[in-house]
Amino acid sequence: MLDIIFRDDDLVAINKPHGLLVHRSPIAADAEEFALQLLRDQLGRHVYPVHRLDRKTAGVLLFALNKDTEKLMQQQFYEGKVNKKYLAIVRGYTPDAEEIDYPLRKENGTLQEAFTRYKTLARAELDVSLGAHATSRYSLVEANPETGRMHQLRKHFAHIFHPIIGDRTHGCNKQNKLFKERWEMETMLLHASGLSFNHPVTGMPVHIKAALQNEFLRVMGVMGWRLPETELKNQLNLQ
Image (tube, rainbow, N blue to C red; front, side, top):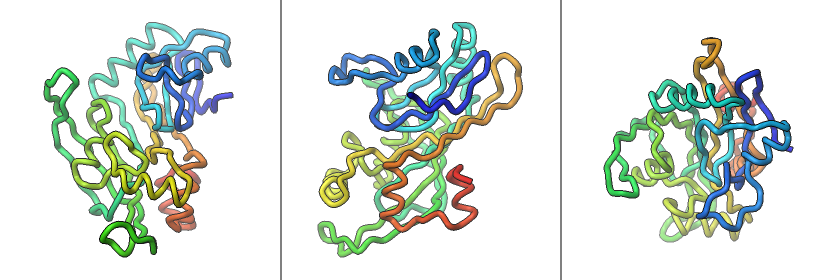
């Protein structure tokens, strides 16, 4: 059963687990379960995805319950009227806050503007050597992509040399191998923690939060981020 975290007459949101595809795709022929079909069967009615999350990304995934709402919500995403929050664990010590203004290329070669803001919530240094480094450093960041390009956060953090742990396509192979061999962790540590927007039918503000999945929490424990601090708990939407 999918974890439903918001529902009204027009919209429904789930906390998508890592590894679950939104819908059938020819590039993932190995998959047998999909969020769209699972939620449809769980609710006993048609649902319409209004945005996408990568297969390995967890967190808030929003669906419409009718075609009119689907179009209205997709328009809000297209116009940048939806505030999106993500949490990620990345390689290295990131700055306290930074803006990434770096265009990304589509599959057809066209460049698109892409803009991300992020802030650092916590840092950790582990007594684990890797390559020429005697220790390994990591950061927990909250990211707000203001545009919605494919793999935007993955590409942006790779661009600033702080790739997301577990990202096989754009990440660091040495780090991914370390996490697999030492901690048996292959999950991409990217979580869609929140969506905020005005309801397309009522016009009222909507704020949807998704708690972290167990894989993400396990790595936070490895880092020593035990969440005793009120501020960090608030940032992680876990209070």
